[in-house]
Length: 101
Ligand SMILES: [Zn+2]
Image (cartoon, rainbow, N blue to C red):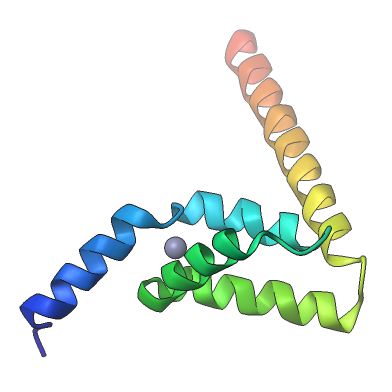
């Protein structure tokens, strides 16, 4: 079903007036440290009304937070660091292999 003009206008408006998906992800981890201002929470919520990915992401963050308070943010930090370190190591290896050729 094609969305009507009102719905299209709403989606466009929300898209232009709410944080980007990247921002929402960042705010989600920030939220673990403490409650966000009401206006920010409102904009994040508005974003989730049109973005299924962020909605799911926020639900997962909340699940982890509820299951193990104080753990979710650590996991996020750890995975972020290990990921980039891993990527760096892979790059170095690839470069070395290229030099050896
Ligand atoms: Zn999103």
